[in-house]
Length: 256
Image (cartoon, rainbow, N blue to C red; front, side, top):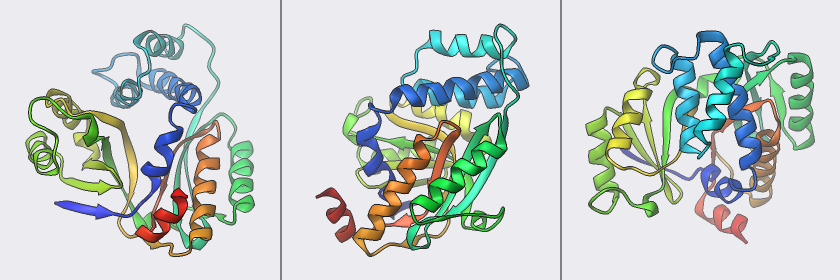
């Protein structure tokens, strides 16, 4: 079950979390509002709302802000017509990228996203071009340095917890761990990790790569990181999922 990945996504993005927190909350607020508009304001009866709620709470969004977003979605505020879209593309070095998008203007967003790919040495691809290299999974990012309840949160202990809560994979990702599960098991696994006192850095439905693209050139790797950052900064992009594999030497070069 335990795996290893050289993906530098978490490692190179985590330092930017605080600076991007306001933008992240704005995106989450929109996600919550749209979910409430589509399926109602009950967390128990709206799986999409529950997912957005859990993600918001893990990232530290206040309950008051979440409640305001839910009320807006259930009719106590104006809301445009939003749609969910998945975009696929290639980054520098042939890295495959999947985007979760929530937009009220697909033509504007498509043009923006295409422009970002072009600017950073990639290209927006047609549907299905890279999707076969990913699978949809529930994904929880764990920071072992934060510790857990009781014994220290070692990899062996975390693996025990993963088995107990019904998740089906544990992968090391840089200094963190990723717990993976079937999408349908997301809510139960989330509850189990909470009960076990596992500190989470992120919780989401993600496109998890089933095969990776090795990027051995530090210059190309830097371009990949810049593209991913630019896509994450776009207001309509809810999630960026990529399959780069940076060897240790490249990771060290990027840290300089």
